[in-house]
Image (tube, rainbow, N blue to C red; front, side, top):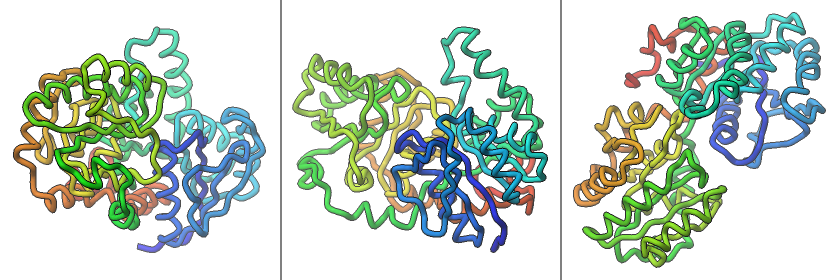
Length: 383
């Protein structure tokens, strides 16, 4: 299907996180489907990943997402795009209010990429109210909500009260044409360049959410059964604590923290096993990428996403959160009996950029309603 409409994308870029990469992948897909795309920039800040050719950048001249309200309303009134896609909660709220101020028929589509109630678990009632109340006021006024997984969709309905018919579940645009090419590039790490024992891989920000402490403790148990090594890619505020834990467990020569790397695919594709140890997710892109590269996986059964990506454990074991014993057993099982690589690759075929961006455009341009929760058949094989 080819689209011929002008659309806009509004998101706050704060680094090279999953949201930023997914938005750039979507912009690329929108252009390839024939859309004219405006990427609206806050404070002139561009994403760290390359902006796809054919995407026009429009600086709003604001210093913060919330101060973008009036500039965004002016943009909508002047340019009147057919649809605007907002990503991240603050941008979502501002986009909905800006459309109301501008008084234009632009369709406002908001994207939710995480299970917010899990992220706020343990926080004070006041903090939750600060998050939830603006969402309850604004989200029911948008035209549609895109959730990256069924769990995220159910969560946003509970939090905001948005009508279920407005909520659409669409796979993240994770798998790109360049992924296989990048995976084939030489890898600079000696443990992977000339492997002499299995290498387990973890990838993500070194934060509480990713719970690499449980992965390290599970790995320590694994090494008693299978001599192996562990590489954890990423940076974050828990780096020192993770390095201290590694030293206390006597794993300093078996665990490495290379930090952020430009090409993680070269690492993941050569690993014997990828482990997702998160406490919460939306739809874990790195888990999807590992499967797309044919790398066996183990994941926590966290809210939400891993259970859907792994088809309830069919494509990799699901283990309880913060249970390093169960994680170690699953890691040993997969290393001793790895699954078929081609089966893993096919399991995530629906996460290709072309497929995902087409479903987004169906919702944004109101072409069809095949991705609603009531009728998810538009996402073939998802449920």
